[in-house]
Each structure stands twice: as structure tokens, then as C-alpha cells.
Image (cartoon, rainbow, N blue to C red; front, side, top):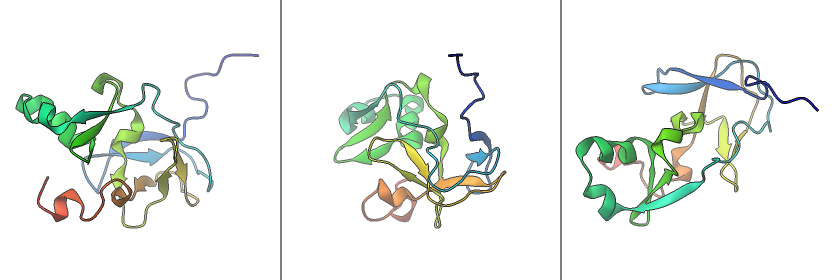
Length: 136
């Protein structure tokens, strides 16, 4: 059995987004139901908000820009040095990607080549989104 090449089973790449900053874009058509990125290899960890609040502005910005606040903590990657492409999914009102129970991601409809992959942030933020409540 041969080893997979780095481009095999890759469906998307980073690019400049019209939604916000950097986004994730399909490099070829993606069928509904395709698992896109898989779970985070290092896992997700909760970091207490008190710890984040005590950090320098630049380190705190990592949590504000990339993490999901939940119950007094931030859900973060094991290390910010290991951010995967999934951390760059932008919010979409009609998302084409959903998070699975194992923290993977799946296409919820067919996605065209070049289309930006989006997810509904409301799945992670109960109630109003951060920008709707003035928190970022």
C-alpha cells in the first residue's frame, strides 16, 4: 500500500474572502456528504476566560479571532501553531458546511469549484453572534 501524497483527499485551500479576511475555498466540485477536514489532530481544549483575559493583547487576539467562547472558556486548538484550514471557515447565512459530532466537517450540499465554504456560527454561539452583541 503506497503512502498518500500531500494533495490527496484535499478539497479546499485558503484565499481572500469577500465575507471576511481569509476564507476557505473549494479547489474542485465537492459532493454533498463529503467529509472535508476531519477532526483536529491535536484536539480541542477549553481555556478559561480568566487566563485569556490576563494575556498580552496580541496573544489574547488569537483567542478572540479563532476560538469559540463557551461557558466561561474558549474552545481552542491544542496549539495555535497547528491551526488547520477549518479554523478559517467564515460564517454564512446559508452555510454549505456543518460540524460533525467528532469535530469534523461535512458538506451539507454540493459545492462548486471556487465557492467559499461557510458554516453557521450559531452552531457554536448560542443566542446572538459576537458582532450582533457588540463583542468583536
